[in-house]
Image 1 (cartoon, one colour):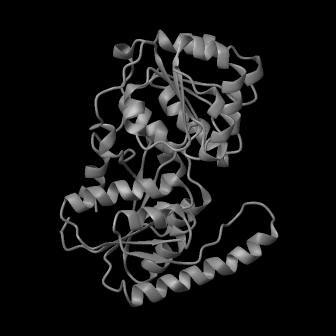
Image 2 (cartoon, one colour; image 1 turned 30 degrees about the vertical axis):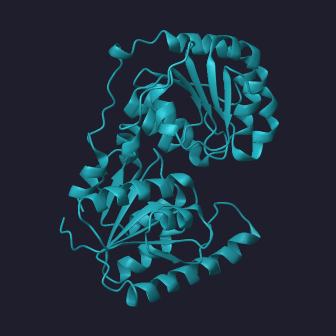
Length: 345
């Protein structure tokens, strides 16, 4: 791709949509692409990340399109229309020389994809999860190229797709030396915001878990005060983790939700994991994400409904006995997803 290309990224609403955009931008910049800007919401995480990474940022109005009846749908429809108009103004003004609109998902990226396509820009989409959400279904209709993380996602898209894999931050492969403890390291996380369900699970099994493992628990910032008294030599807690790549690389076992990001990171690092998918996730996407690891042999799934009648320690013992060397390699066509995406722009 020519280094003179001008690219506008758009994505937000969750950390996954924003972080993957930052990962791609970091790589594109390393390849000499200098003119990269961002369209996002007024108050989303993407705004903070863009400013932190010195990316010119343009805020627009955004509204969520729900699959169920809600009075908020009426209000958000007009927010959405206004967001589309704002994107038209941007692409006819400050961003008129843009060549590519790259959407990483979330409803904030729908207006830029629609306006970009109508005004003759190339529109590209990356779908991180194994199943498309409503926003990305809409964006896919306007996309010139669609990149997906998993082979199975192709069955849900009518257009040809490129199985790029999930672009993973370079820090996951360049992390410092592994953390060594005198017990197996169990990393427990409910994601950046934490999970009350997983936190409660830890409470229920705390004595058994802390007797066997050294535990690093990402509880979420909103829950951290509830766990301060439990801190001990073998139980560390964090609200939000800055050294996630090092911890994931060092973990012997992981208990986690099954967002696309951490699923892809676990696949890349070949870590043994027990997934507890979010029950209310759209189209049960976390379950299908988790199945990508289960197919490879180093993952197990425990549903929220089955938790009470399950033996958590027994499941973890079973995972400990998995032989990594005998695992099926993940059939991902891209050894370097960021490079493959870059080459196909």
